[in-house]
Length: 429
Image (cartoon, rainbow, N blue to C red; front, top):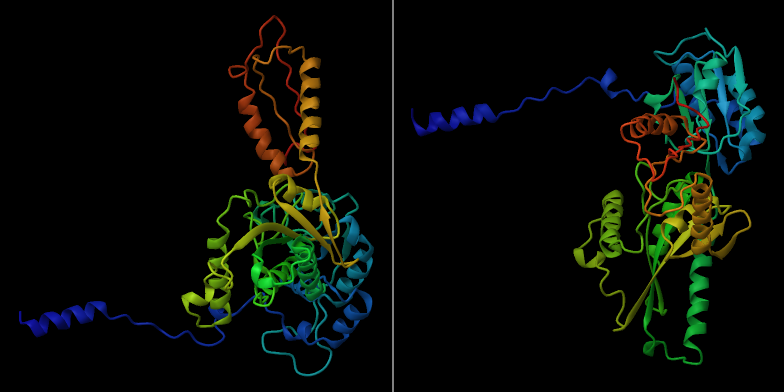
């Protein structure tokens, strides 16, 4: 075989044929895209804007489309305590506009001309919703519902684990992000002036770099990312205070999202500089900007030779509950909380030592009740939350194996160990 024939065979083997998919094929249709009879329904948008608060995104059109796609006739709504006041209004809108098609004009191709179904019943679950782990699909199924809409929390319980189809609505809240950024900047500028005292020559002062870790609840996740980007983009050439900001993540939660039971840990020990480089590269790719490596370098933020770095948590929330989870996970970091409703930035504290002392006293009290006087005596115990069906189910299975008679450790003496398991929900069985 000649060299030309051999090269021709190699070229044939490497040739790749790609067929262009026709427009409108099943592979190119986005099932999450709203159809025109919902997206262009002016009456629906008018009712939403005049009935529900403008700064709250309840994703009503998306919910209506999900109801129609799943042919749901019995719908259940589950809301946390702070949002139950809007349940009746949301329910009325869903009942009125679900399965309602455009009243005038030629219907789009593929859309049904007349409504064939309607919501026969809509239930608002009244039990307290403590958090993202409290999705109450069992109660919804008991009521005969075929779709559950859960408001105000992230997808901590996977959709594949629920007994009926579920839809998560985060209920994002729009806030004044620029006011948050201005509050943070003015706070540290004022602190720097107090530290420098009477010295007026800024060139002789060390540059103070604030390494901001921006977090919050799921309702403010867009504002968390936006505020971190704005803080990071603040120019520090004319000030002795500069800012570098990232949004930490505790998977499987969204970036910056914190739950009462789950928060990013080890933030004081993390490599902030490397995390910042990755964040800025992602932003550059998202914005399709071509930047040089030197433009994202953070080793020399300004011309001053001395740089003092301070790492701070900036938390966006209207309460302390979720913030306390972040403070417990990162006890050495300073915490600032911005309340988007009062528009106030406050420094928050948490008595870690006192909390540990109280918990230790509770453990010692249980040991006294069980008659365990020696610290060398070993006892296997199970501490279980009273909420969270899926978590309770998995822990119950593991605790059953751990507390088998062959694995129990008897303490010294004649009295056996008593192990108490507190379970609010014993799983789905």
